[in-house]
Image (spheres, rainbow, N blue to C red):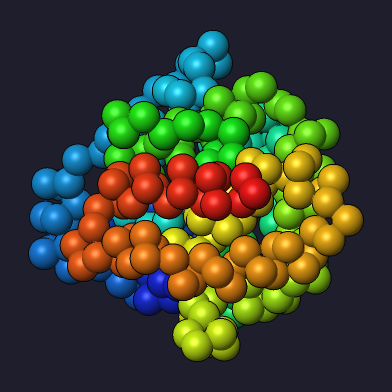
Length: 261
């Protein structure tokens, strides 16, 4: 064997010393420990065969099963892979949206969060919740997985891109990095909240044409966000133990109605 960057101790290790080992004298060969030999003999080697005509869903399911060792990919990293497999240009489109500065400002994600794909996750959630209605049939993560495949397959980017950019330009002009923070006594504070993202970003996106037609759209959005945090109905979205499947059946319709004017 040859030592590697992560396993330098494998250098010159052999199953058993032999004169037939090329380029390594017998005196320099290191026999593999009997315990390790036994572990290798008892190990199973799994072979997954994926034929060329296999559909994208099959490829994704296989990728998920293989993602069991080493550093496990998170849910969004898996979605990024399936988007590329289904429609690479669409995956590039989502990446461009996730890099849009007004969006990044509103998201206010740290470098560590971006490294873990939080920007892509929220851009994906935006597209899914704006264009696909949740029926409660699937778990939230499964719903997002299935829906982004549907959107990638449809490959509509012009209207979606315009809606995304208009929404976050408005939010950036209204409150910048405080757009998704809780307002208490009229002042924003704390961290960016997913519930706020679902209510505010999706609510605006689903009403974007009517909002953009207003002459006072920035002031109007600013006022609606402030009033939203004073709404009695909002408290129920933060109940302890509230499942995501129940939450998004409340937040998305609430935000859609709230920003309908």
